[in-house]
View 1 (tube, helix red, strand yellow):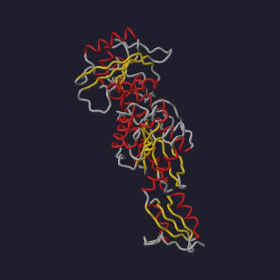
View 2 (cartoon, helix red, strand yellow):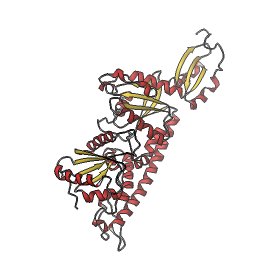
View 3 (tube, rainbow, N blue to C red):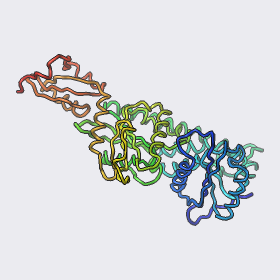
View 4 (cartoon, one colour):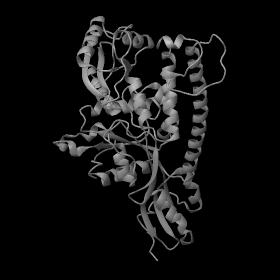
Length: 446
């Protein structure tokens, strides 16, 4: 059966399908996951005209759905006239082919949809390379059987895989399918080389930042939890903010001054989502290393969302994948302004939680205080007596550390507080021993 051509007028009409499997182990219900798929489809620009949920012990290995539901779906296509069917799971290549034979519509899965959204929102060269790598790795095993034209002899363009460009003279008898596969493999090799260069550049930038000995706070959270809005509010940056899933993909770093004049580097990162495709996690390795290398994580949770707890646990699962789940964390319980009764929010469910509204600016000072406290806890405690001739060290302590006590004595400035460990060596000549009575009996001030 030929798949009908997509209409060029208006958004693509899409129908959503999911299977609730008895063996599926997840915090998310199939209904909630299907609702999220609808939000993803709308973000991609589709018009959702219907949804279907089937309860099965396990998805059918040939068609994902049961035979009767496939027939029902074909009948609905005639009735509703949709052009696209989106499945809330990753389909095997054979499942996708079988479904497209049975339906007069294109068939894609959740992974393809997320990759498409990433492709739309990638702005930088790094982001585009990462998305293209993930897309091609996903499409390569799905080339076979995509149409009779792929079995024809040499000639033509890649078509289904979406990568153009001639590769020179091809030998006789080589099918287009073989050519397309070779082109994709060549392009994948190029992308990996380019991304390795980008990764080396990003590593160099992180080393340069480390030389500044400023703590790094990475903003993490479920997609559309308000990360970029909070990032802008804390840093006075102008990161793109939209009420869409994955509105921003590319990390942005800004210097932020916390209470006590303590400076940190705040980094906005890509949002997470349940069942984030493994290929995307691998492709965005360089970007996600911003999370791995951070000193403190600032998790943003949309407490107005009915699945707030499930979303936060999904973030924890991704952080565990990255081996970053044990990092010190502050939680911003965001969008409190959307709740009819904000007092019902229980901050004790989250580590170091502060209730905020990034959009309205509520609770931001309390959040800055909490961040300063948690960042300082990662530093080494110091008591130093700095000569007045070394005022630069006093200023450095204020900018890079957290001053808990400052007194002016005859010999110099007494500073008690915390500093990043790489800076402690600068104060070695002026470091005081933990002598009893040091702070209780200060000398007269000059």
